[in-house]
Image (cartoon, rainbow, N blue to C red; front, side):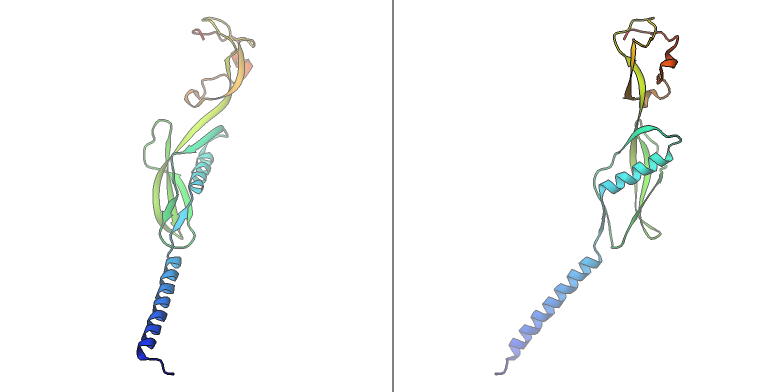
Length: 169
């Protein structure tokens, strides 16, 4: 029972098609893009900002970045964060984030890091009048955000000695 030339050509065509599909699938796997998850970007920026601080502080760092970063090609990438030449705005400090593979920078982005400073500070425990002395019964100490008032708050009861209210509260 001899197969016809047409049957052989159809069979060879099917085999060639399967081989081509296999090569295309393999090429797609080899040249797959790398996705850097948002959480890794945010963690890298937070670590950099925390490390760049002059002193230990109670601070919360948020990142004005949303979404994953996709870079072309296969192979592991690293994130490098450093100072940015872009001028900051109120409430945020821009940092430079580079996505690198080997020594080559694949993507360079400017990401804004926001810092909120916290401290335990004196707050009014009751309504206070102009000229009233800040005595231990007039205040209580609470953890509050002090970003806009850095170094202009009272953190210890001893600092209140002789201080009087300048306005009503």
